[in-house]
Length: 160
Image 1: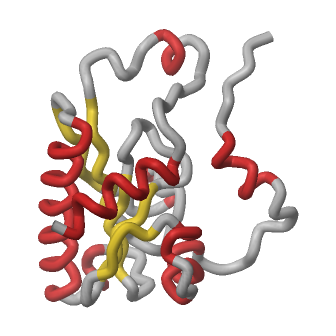
Image 2: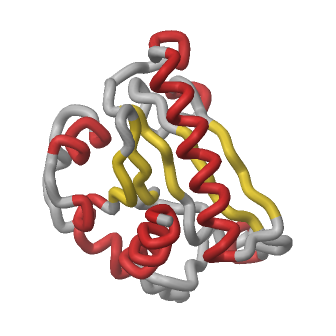
Image 3: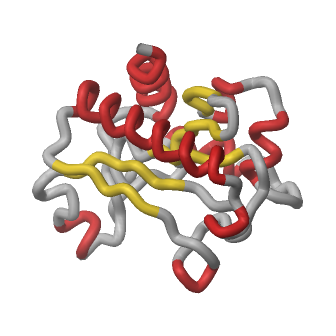
């Protein structure tokens, strides 16, 4: 039997019943950015680490306003979302030196949105070989650092 260590998931699995409502709306209403892994807050959007990242550094840009589609979002929200996405790409490049970056969103549950009903832009660094045998055959991902370490590194890079 293989064992993979993922201490950051402990908080999630020990919470018992999942709270109702939108996870993004709930976390942005709270004031503990470190606990919620919010990296930065803009005027219309915030940047947050993905709790279940595909790769180290996987973050998301999320509007404060709960909208399900880009068509529902105000132009200034979308403009800032792209500005923060650009900053995120630059911060990831500076901190992790990836060979590429995936940027995109899944709108709607059937499109793969893990949080359907509240749009969010994924920004994640990629390297050749990061979809190795563990992901492909073992259906598991290996991350090189804890989310709190990633949060500190990227929060500092985004502040510049």
